[in-house]
Image 1 (cartoon, rainbow, N blue to C red):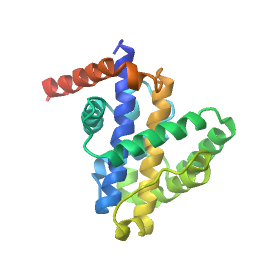
Image 2: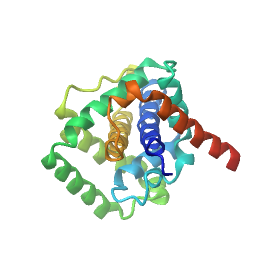
Image 3: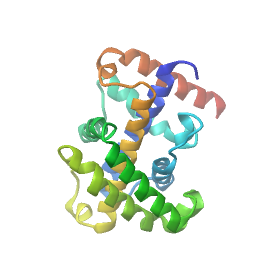
Image 4: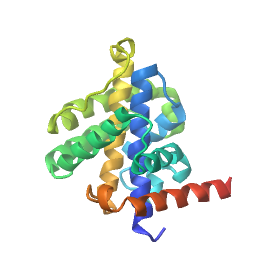
Length: 214
């Protein structure tokens, strides 16, 4: 992928997909577990081989890329998801300038890995809930205070459940991780206004490649 907008679309697709997980958890108490695991794994993948490698390949962010094209075509499925996306991008703009916060996050992630080993699908299958809690604490302790809190809306029966709260915050953390990637590959907020067509075309091309390879 030589086109910079391919990398921008992939990163934004990751932001969108984690935001979708937040909405699903808040409204139904459930989410797609394989995609939730991809989100959690991405948080620990701090030295990827490529943009797509953060998510174990573009095929794992199909839902996010599809939502991204709808969003940039001014046809988002849910306004709440757009709020989580913009909130994640906003807090990330503060986070990437805060070396102390980034160092604290790195230290906390290392601590989690020292307890559970390599964070892969097998590890998450056995310890998904246990790992969600410390990730949620990193989000609450370090990331969320950097700016105004992202308001999560949904059904109170789920929002008041401790495990679902943890998963929501962990998914927001994953959205922020994807937003960090977006900034790293040259993304900026002006592109969401003035380079929509380029991003949409890149996302559509990636989705078409998935279809052709399926």
